Length: 367
Length: 269
Image 1 (cartoon, rainbow over the protein chains, first blue to last red):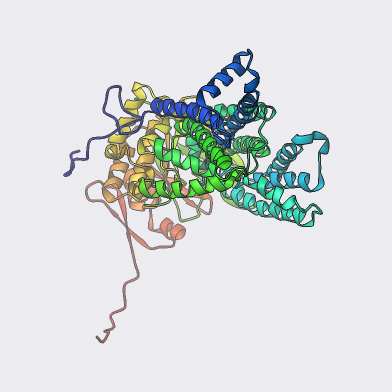
Image 2: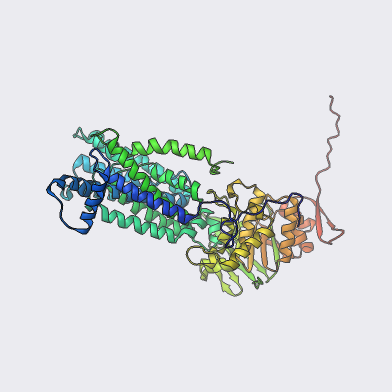
């Protein structure tokens, strides 16, 4: 039926036939190639730059040697140690943690259907903090050496997850609102427990150590800390990518999801478990780095839309690049001191987020 | 796409949540290709009964049959290939575009991630055109008016290519033209339709049969002229009506008898 005012020509993207003019949006492959390039550059920059700068050709040569074997000159030993033993694992860990936090952020926002959620809203990181604090204050798990903090943080995260799950569970499954409320409430309890531990500690340094850990740092990165974390993050991203459409469907509401053949309650349980394990792994190696999991998903959504498959393909790469640069700033801004990562993510993240939200036609929470 | 409509049967369906009986041994037959309306006051169990049909709720008793299959023994995705629903909880919070939302109607037909082929893209575009929302395709769902969004969700249900269409208050937010178009569409679509409606006259005009619910139970079920009588309306809704026959279509129409305004007192200016 012809209406008085002819509607403007449709601009399809998803429904466009091959060769048809589409709604303007950057093609996904271009974004992915661009970000992969940026990631490679960031890794090299992160390795080269620091309190001691290693010249770029030296970095590449030493990396090549490390990967292919061979010999180095005696005067290169210090540079080699900096490049291969200190900075490379640290930069790679930054990439893995950034990618993981972004992916988990996307998952949590879908899980509780609330864009203000991040991996820490479910109380997972506060639980991890209790574990880590117990190590700092009481010297728990002393037999594990340097891994004690990570192990305790991971156990704390899982314990917190179990508590939140049991407290939030109801007859109708895990409803998003109950999950958020329970997570937030228990997070306060965990923080209180942690404060008491620090307060009663005979160790005067405890408060500072705990605070630094809470704000996040990659200072303890080593080759040993990489494999488990990397495996966890990669597996999580692959699993999430495979459920992209299911996450889209779940974002439409539980009833709609049911009418589209998706059991939202089961999917939510699965997502919650995945989130808890990955967040636990990440917090264990890097402390509680805030803001990445909250903001990166939003920024990426503004670029590529809300479809979870595109989102989950792009967000981890963006998060990896972002955290490499954050870590680089953390160790170069006030040498020889290192700033906590949480300070920098907030310093960069808050203004960027506000700017993007105000300038783009981002409809979230408005209109 | 000619989809064979299927028959739907609710047999003694009960729903009890936390000790409250929301639906009480409801029996209802919807023949293949029939349009049946569920009417009743707020809280009469219409939406709850429909939820059992599109599997958002498991009945605490009774069986929902789809052409001889017990729904509770079918997979969720299997069901969604045959039963599409327009629900009331469709407050999307993330800014998906209209075409993305509509395309999700294909999700039950595909395992894993969505990948539309040429036929499915055409199906989606036809649904957009049919509901008069093609021009909104690239818009964010969050920026739409209530009526536009309702049409988007209906387009998604059509894209599911269902045999049965379950609609919970489909005319909510729609302007009168789109209400009439929707009801005309329902009558001509050839699908089995079960729909909760508030607007009694629209129901009388479009439904082949009407089931009247009150407090979770079926009061009566039959042709609009049999069900919509002053006595049943008074006992179920507590309002007085006069029933007239539509001069053109012959459908029964209700005129609501408001108490005559005795307020003729003159007010000084």
